[in-house]
Structures are given as structure tokens and as C-alpha cells.
Length: 302
Image 1 (cartoon, rainbow, N blue to C red):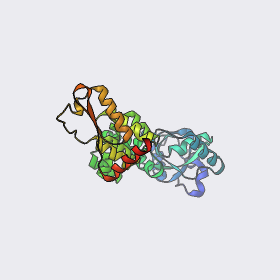
Image 2 (image 1 turned 45 degrees about the horizontal axis):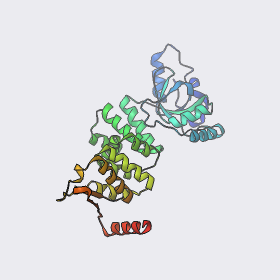
Image 3 (image 1 turned 135 degrees about the horizontal axis):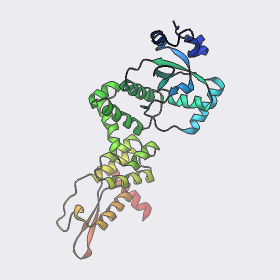
């Protein structure tokens, strides 16, 4: 019978703990594994496969090398978590960053919690929860994992909310990020914008306009509040004029000019055409503060 691993016995390794079990005695092996479940043992690094449900897809190489250097000196202090795949093989549940750093440090064995993860859904949930608690996942990685939980584990938004302990509105906001253009999603990953910026951009229905506003937000380093005000003005219904076509009926080249002025002023602009090449440029403002901002902008540039 294999004994549970105490901290003082971590150095023994899993092979030593199971050395008294006959190879052909499968029942005794299973009994020993049950004894080890939810305890810590030293496992061979080359017997641990990567978790296919890992929500984190990108690992900072410099940070990994720094952790690896620390592990070479002090060893891996915090155990990873694995499940048995039968025989001497194990699959990672959580701790991929630590496993990768240990491989870089050329460790042969590392401490691991052995858990009885019954199915793929539990694997996915454990990996997600562990990463949220321990790692700085970017919003897109979280969004992708939420979507996988819904698709692969047949969960509703409400069910997912209960599983991960988040409000339903929070779940919906994250899932909404996956509707954004790839360029904006990459901006979130690179921390060029925040979740607040992305939520404001998501309220813009036009794909091209989303990207245009995103570029302005990044270029001008707009705050979330400025972005919200800017988008709110963009989304206001167009007022119909009596002397010419509405903005929605403007020729394409005039719409481009209108958008360019609007982006430059960070305010809603209506370009109205009249006959014989005449027209109006109407600059909208939503508050006294915004009017003062526009006046300051004009004074600085005139």
C-alpha cells in the first residue's frame, strides 16, 4: 500500500512511493493512486502533458526565464496540480507557467497535487478558476475561456455566472469582447485600451467606424470617460435638415471628411450639404464642459 506524501517525503518521488506494488496488480495500483489523490508527490516532468483547456495562450518569455532562474536556486516552491491519465502519465490541471519554467531550469521532478478531475468540464473549470486567481489573464483570454465553457460544457450565461462567482452582466461584457474587430481585441491584449474603452467601442454598430474610433482613442490616449462621451455623440440620431440631405445620405467622400473632423475634435459633427456646393459644419456638444473644451481647442489652434 502506498502512503500519503508528507512534506518531508517530497524528495522520495512517486516511483519510490509505488515501488512496492507489483506491475501487474492494477487493483493495487488504483488503490495507491486513490491514497495519493489530493496529496503532493514528486512527479517526473517528462510524464506531465500540457492541459488542453488552458485559457492562457501567451506566456512572456522574459518573465518565464526570470522564474526559471529563481527555480534553479530555490526549487519549485508552489506545487502544480495534475490528474492521473493512467500508468505513469499525468495531465496538467493548473500551473503551466511553473511547469514551463521548471522545464527551462532542467528539473527532472517537481512537486504536484494529484487531483481526481473526473471529466473535461471540471478540467476546464479548474484551469479557468486557477488562472483567474493566480495569473493576470488579459480580457480576451478570459472571454475565450468563458465562451468555451458555454460551448463545450453546455452552460447558459446564468449557469456560467454561478460557476465562476461573477455577475451575469460581467459575463456578458466579457463575451461581448469577442464581437470586436481583431485589431481592437489585440489592443486589449497589448493593454493599449482597457475593458472600459472596449465596452464603449462595442456600442458602435459600424465595423469600420469602430476601428476608426479605436485608432483615435489610442492616438490621443483618451480616458474611458472621454471615449464614452465621444461614442455617445457618434451614436446620437441624425437630425434632418430642411435645406439638404441628411448625414446618412452624404456622398462617401463627404462622410469621410465628417468623420475626420469629428475625430479631430473628439465631438459629434454633422456635415450638411446645400445647393451649388454650399453647406454647413455643425459641431455638437453635450455639456458646458464639452463646450469649454472645444473653445480651448479652437483658441490653441487659431
